Amino acid sequence: MHAHHTSARLAPKKANIMAKMVRGMTVPDATELLRNTSKKSARLFETVLRSAVANAEHNFKQNAQSMILKTVIVNQGTAYRRGTPMARGRVRPLRKFLCHIAITLGFAGETKVKSKKSAEKIEAKPMNKPTKKTSVSSAPSK
Figure 1: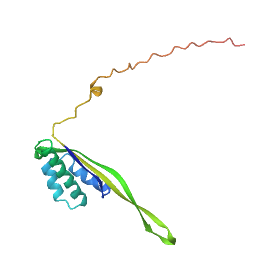
Figure 2: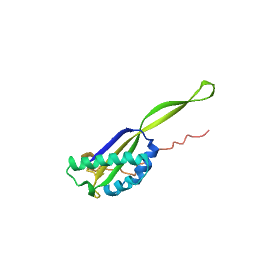
Figure 3: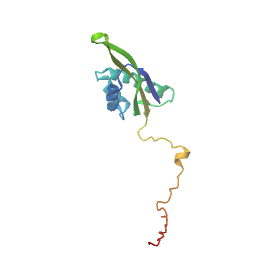
Figure 4: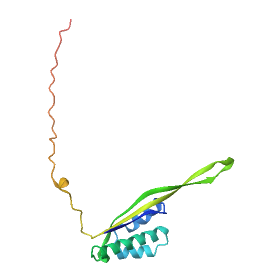
């Protein structure tokens, strides 16, 4: 039960501030917090959260109001390359960053299912290594 927004016109640093605020909250609490926050990132997160709630209710037939925000991931996207004119005909480069926002909903006590390979126990190697015995040959001195 997840939703994502790719190439949002928002810097990843600014989006991470909002991600830290809502990560781990319940859906109604996060919705109320985002509605009362006056940031551009709050509007973007609110639309992604509404999409994740709709996916949970329609596709998975879950009650989204009892779920929490399991993961909120913000990754850096591509950057627009722009320039500002400077003296003597030069150009100072500007990079306008984009970000990708992904929200996954889940239940509070839910854990991920481990794969067969990670579930198998790997035998540990013995810690005590045998030491090499070296013989010191004493050459007769003249």
